[in-house]
Length: 418
Image 1: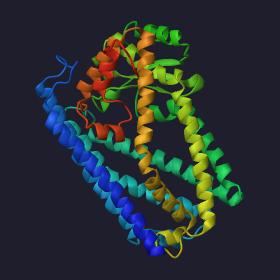
Image 2: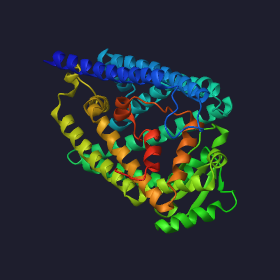
Image 3: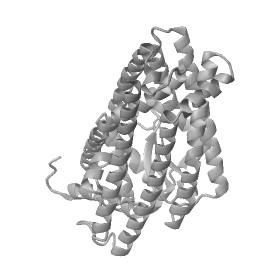
């Protein structure tokens, strides 16, 4: 029975990998067939040369993603089904230490292993793919600096969260799932307050928007929406890449708007206002707090399920192990949990796309200038070499934003049937 269950889980994991590979291949075949066609509404904004460049960029990124997925898949199979988990668990236990120390060491080791596996792919993407297409502007020194900072920050939070959670498990064996949920929720909110002032400045320089009159226009727009924002800033994103973006950061009184300097160079004031109006739409339509609420409710349910599964005692046997530490069993649950939720990916993608449609409509109504958002989306697509011809099935499965051709068409349509 035990070995049968292990084979079922392994086969199911391989099936998820195959589905991902087939969807990727389907998407690339669709791009190869239609990639040279200029979509309706994009005439004059893109040409065949740009589309050829976009197709080549998408293909290269997909190849890197495919190799990375294969590598991670092989490593996960070796770890969970090839005996490496049991060996690693014994090695960590050999260091001795308390329940908390052993658990923290186990999770820190896994975090470091993930970082090491990702390094060659991140390096190749930044200095080969992104450089070849004119996006990367960072130096090798800056890349290593970012790697060191993200590693240290990640390890700090891993130690803090794992240590705190394991401490609560020891403190309240019958109620730790609820206490750990509260601890994680508090840290999440604290991080939202902390990040704009402590984390983000470690990587970028933020300063008031320099474009004349733009901050006043932004504050006027936000005033119409009734959304208070503490500061409107621009960030030196061009130090690393020519990709462009804009985002809200922080929460409550520390909420602020951040514009990439690359975006400021590429867009008119009206287009920038349209992009920000779209982001405001997420706040005004409650998408942010709804996602936080769903995340917290889901987190509570997951932690209770973990509590019950650990109390069951049969988790090691599910993967053919005779025994496993608390931390190793948590790793097993995380792996199986990812498999269980795989079929839900299209649903979560659909919900995200629905929110994007709502934010587009809000931006259209707030600014009264749907064409500004349409041209801004076209520019973002053109400047970032985004795929204009995703396969519909691939887009339904993975896309968290509606395909840009559909968004532009709907914004320009006299009748919005969304």
